[in-house]
Image (cartoon, rainbow, N blue to C red; front, side):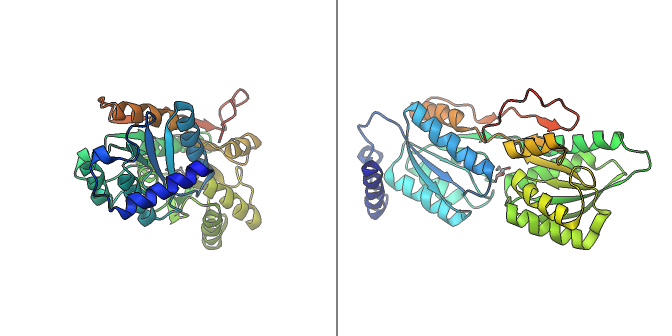
Length: 326
Ligand code: AHR
């Protein structure tokens, strides 16, 4: 506890110095352990909480000192946290960008201070690739493709004259998983004339908004909805509540497809309330620590590290599936 108060005071001091010191004057200078500043975007989902846990546990296991900030879904707060890490002269910065645009200025400041940056989970959009050293995360486009592939397989089991009306619950607008899952899904089902995209609403990756959005769509389309594609598990949990309250049975009256692979979603899949869960692992901590150590040691690192992911569907035998851990 006393250690974190000291760390907090040191950050304040560094901030008040305005970040004008040289790298040699770093507060962490002379300490053997590596100091990593991690700017998390929020705690909107079980996935996100699992991601924070993975990073904090991995830092501890790797002997890396972690400065952590939760921006509560605010890009402004995330930028402020990154600036505080620059002022404190951490060795490496890692952050999960809430949206893709708007990071160039703060990342230029990090580069000028000589601090390497790891982008974790989501991506940034920039013209200047030298603003970050590595990206560690998922192939969100592939996740959308896997969701679409499941739906094509499901369609092949239905009568030849059956058409499917799909509604989509999108994640945070302009975030990478929202843009890429949407694109991957659409590209995969586009040429199938029996699949129609009825509507698409942003549920911001949250349970409450997922419920609200699906309630609105049910009021509009009623039992005309055949399929729900949710960009994450949390919004799907809310959607299931809305579907049940409307008097329909999820997994049967409405085909449910979700992304993340939280334990709760897998349990719902096993119960038949969900039909397909695409995996997106939040367990990025060990990889971040490995790359952070290499960067601090001045080594070359692989620029793009993708997680290995698959999908779980009603067609699979899930009996032997290991506990998900998130
Ligand atoms: O960026 C990963 C996404 O963010 C996860 O799918 C979602 O649950 C989280 O909030």
